[in-house]
Structures are given as structure tokens and as C-alpha cells.
Image 1: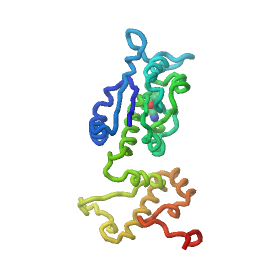
Image 2: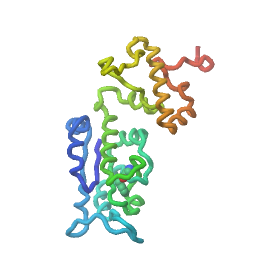
Image 3: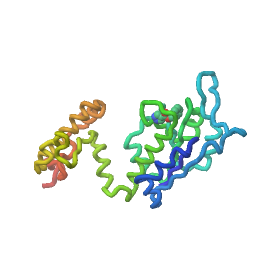
Image 4: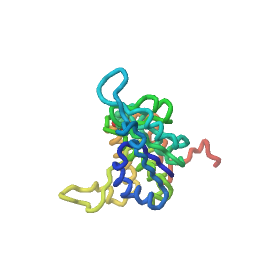
Length: 247
Ligand code: JF5
């Protein structure tokens, strides 16, 4: 997969693209990232990329022309502009993008981006979350990480299974590793019991409790979708419905 990034700060991406699984995916050729320095397309001797807003007001707005010129060779790719005014980034968004041959990530900056960019030069406007950053660079890196872990061969584990836990609509359960006791802080006894049924029930209960308390929005959707009735409690899956099976 190829990811193009349009940014006024290409050096922002140096280390994050070198280390960890993203770095390895790039070295192995599974992922290609091409950085485009927006300043190269800036106006005049100062390579200007922003200007004062029409109608007045504080701050500066990213100009349409530098972005238009930077995006010209990328017109055949799926182009995403990061802005707090976009639709929220979800796992399903990343799943969808991870199957594309080419994705372009455009990093907004300043107090905004000339609306003609969103209107004529991009396919989607996306927000990383309900907070304001200085630029879209962190959002672009979040997408690169999210997409990379779904590319074939990047994560040893079958990733479809990992993403599945998010798709069933619950937060993850608490996890523990050795030692079983540290400073008197004990790992829950059930996890040491060897009783796989009890462990599966405990995990499901912790996931439900966590989701109900921390994410009432996800909890409502989970209940509306049938809750545990429609998701497998154990790897064998739910029992068959005798009224619809052939036997
Ligand atoms: C930006 C105008 C872009 O702040 C963000 C952002 C927050 N969630 N997702 C993106 O991007 C930088 C600021 C102002 C456009």
C-alpha cells in the first residue's frame, strides 16, 4: 500500500516512520510512505501557504493554491483532509482505507483550511477526535499506524481476529502477566484457576462493566444490537438454533 502525506512539517514524521512495525513494514516494502512538503508549493519568495481570512477574524487560513498544486499528481488516490470539523475516525474507517492501493493524508494547520479544498480537492474530511490540535500530523500518524497493523504479514497474529474484538462493540478486559503478586497487588484469582469457562465469563463481565461505565455510547449500541446473545462467549461459538438448522 502507498500512503502520500501532504504537510508543512515533513520532518515531524521522521522517527515515527522509522521505528516499530511501521518502520519494518516500510523496510519490507509492504508499506510505502511519500512525504510532500507543502512549502514547495507555497506562493512567492517566502513560499507562503496561509493568509488572513476573508470577512475578518483572528488567525490564518491555509490557501487553496499550494494544496491544489501539491494534490494535482494525487488526484487518482483517496484523499483525506484532517480537521476537527470532519466526521469522526472509526475502526471501520481504517478497515476500509487499509484495502486501498493508495491513500493521501492532508494535514490541515493554522485556524483552518480554505473551504474550496474540502469542496473540490478531497474525498473525505475526518477528525481524530473532539479536541483541537496544532495540525493534522498526529491524525495522519494515527491512520498510518492503524492501517499498517492491518496490512498482510505485518502483525504475526491474524489481525482480523484482533480487530474483531472492537467490532463486537465492547472495550477490552483488563490484562495481567507475571508476577502473580507485585507490592501486594494481586492478579485476580480466577485467571490463575485454569477454569477456562470461568475465565471466559469473567472476561466478558469485565468488558461489559468497563463499557457500561466508561462508554455509555458504545454500551447503548451493544444492547441495541442484542448484547452477548449475538457474540460468541467461547471460541466454539453460540449453540445452533434447532428451528433453523437442517438437523
Ligand atoms: C487542524 C484546522 C486542521 O486539530 C486537528 C484535528 C483534531 N482532530 N482531528 C484533527 O487538526 C488540525 C486545526 C485547524 C484544520
